[in-house]
Image (cartoon, rainbow, N blue to C red; front, side, top):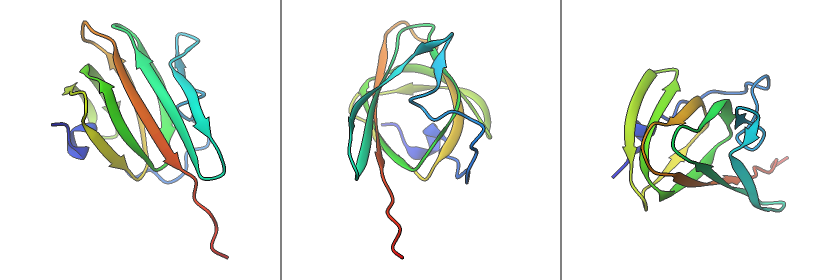
Length: 121
């Protein structure tokens, strides 16, 4: 089972110069699609065929779920490493910056669920 340590969830603060996962792509092509958005949540489905990645981008706090696992190379503040992801695994992140590349032989797919924070003032 994949854990938050394997995903390397790094608390990042704000990095407005980097795109969010929906705006980021790979070789000019989108890899994430908007599944649902309302005043409470934004849900993305991100699909990575073999050899396709996700350029360096920032994530807001989110919950993630692996629909189709595989082998990913992740580069973040902790360095670069390859991990195996398993379908059905999930994680929570307080926010992160990373780049991802599918180095395996199968398409990988993820759901990213971003709750929208409301001011309590």
